[in-house]
Image (cartoon, rainbow, N blue to C red; front, side):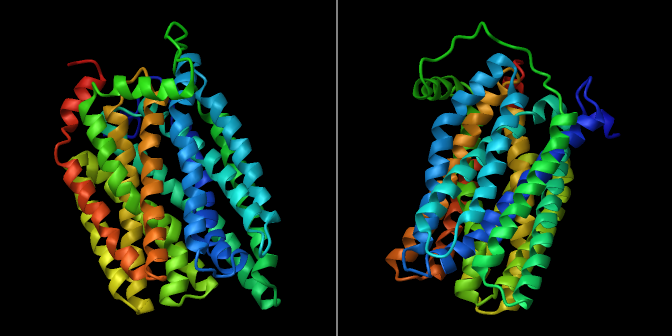
Length: 428
């Protein structure tokens, strides 16, 4: 099957390229800000390694995710009614780029400013991630959705590596000049924001809005009512709802890896900042491979089996990280985590795209975002609480994360992809 055979009628290759470029654009934010650089900078320099630092970081992210949870379904419903996904994506992208650049103002000891800036930037990042995912079913046929999603995630990890690679080169130069983290970290925020802006511009040049306005649909009176209404109507799509429950569990574990990998590497294993950045660089390479391999595999062996294998890999990763004190073993754990990260995120997005009704893409992907962001609260906040209650025992916290992947696998078992796909397309 050729690449064009994977695409819906009327969709051009350049549109898929433009769509994938948004994954390329926004991955620098998660890689540099949330995972590799700013997270460790917040705990080590901004909060001066205080006992509450990890909990404060996870709490700030949780607040941003809570905002997204309760507002994204209403925003998605508005975008569907007005066929304005692209317009809304442009607005939230500008807001995320500006607030990411604002992180450069944060210096050592400025905890309040750091929390405000991270809440704002991560909120708008999450809006953009949800909106770009809602374009996937418009671009790809069901039998090609796994591969197209995998290519998007792989392209995203490439973008993350580009941002991190440039930042790493600058950090190594700055350290050789005797600069402190308070001097070189702000520059990495400008680099990240700049790459985000430039790459996303290609998205807005090539990606088209294929949806038609649905102004006849009744609008809920408030965001809260819209969320309740969408939930009530989504209950009819049982397999989609079951997949969302599964995602709340396993994506909580993925969020721990994204949010706390750098902190764990430096505080527990003893990595230096430049080693941590190299570690995350390798993790992104492995994630690129995982997204590509499982992007093809899930279309061949089935989305459900592909995700099950990924959750097994995640469980092994957590156990390895919890038990080892060796940097060498932790490198292997990080590589496995990367493969699992790429495959789980690609597979989850593709499965959701197959189970969502085609006339309500942005609205139901807003509901999917609700589940993912709830997971992003449950996982990291639980990790932070365990660390705080056990006087800094992060090994116990990472070991307990294994339970999230086990629960996710159990919740995945009842999902019937074929039945859900037929229902989403109106055939049953």
